[in-house]
Image (cartoon, rainbow, N blue to C red; front, side, top):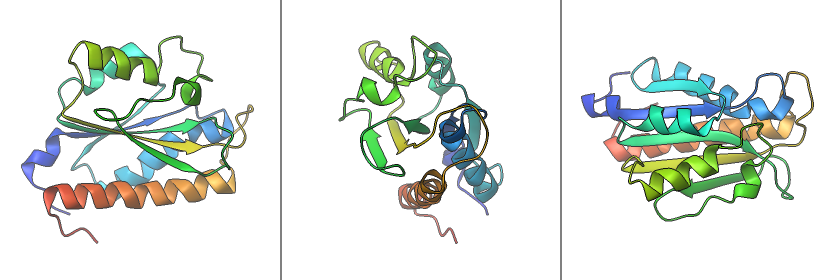
Amino acid sequence: MSLPQKTKNTLIIGIGNEFRKDDAVGLHTARQLKELFSGNIDIVEMSGEGAELLEHWNSYETVFIIDAVRTKNNPGTIFRFDSHTDNLPVSFFNYSSHAFGLAEAVEVGRKLSRLPSQLFIYGIAGENFSLGTGLSKEAEDAAKVVVRKIQEEIKKQFSLNIK
């Protein structure tokens, strides 16, 4: 698929830990998007450490981040946040071993005027964050939905004809 040059200024970040079951849903989703966009959009996998996120998104205009969240909502529930209009609930992302994670990075970026022009965060409610590999069915199904949603957002943003 051929994308316009300006999509090169778009970044997708999948956050997670491969060995904590549903915590890997952001990584899993990023891998699906990488197959879909075939190198036309920068897609990376990260642990979710806040300073690293701030540094990495710094040179992009549009950034999508996908991460697992821990909520009282049903597993597989999808949340979408626009960092310029929505506050990220810190409690969603507090299970990380990082004291300075995604929610904190967004707040610091906001205060320092270091957010991309567009920063969208997709949170997928996980069910099982214990040691091990493999996603729950709910997280896996939600990942497929998020792939379609991001695909549609990019298609709309760049008026693309993506299959």
